[in-house]
Length: 64
Image (cartoon, rainbow, N blue to C red):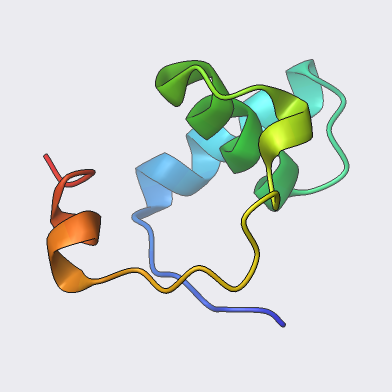
């Protein structure tokens, strides 16, 4: 399943730069790398809790 997200032109340029520098295959891979690094989540843990339902209060914890 894919989702469309809206980002500014500046953010897209930064993602494109990181994609090229890190030789990633997609923007999704770049974003996952950044999220894993920031949240200190092991790569093998991504997708480990499939089917988990996020509540609005859970999502707010990750919002600036």
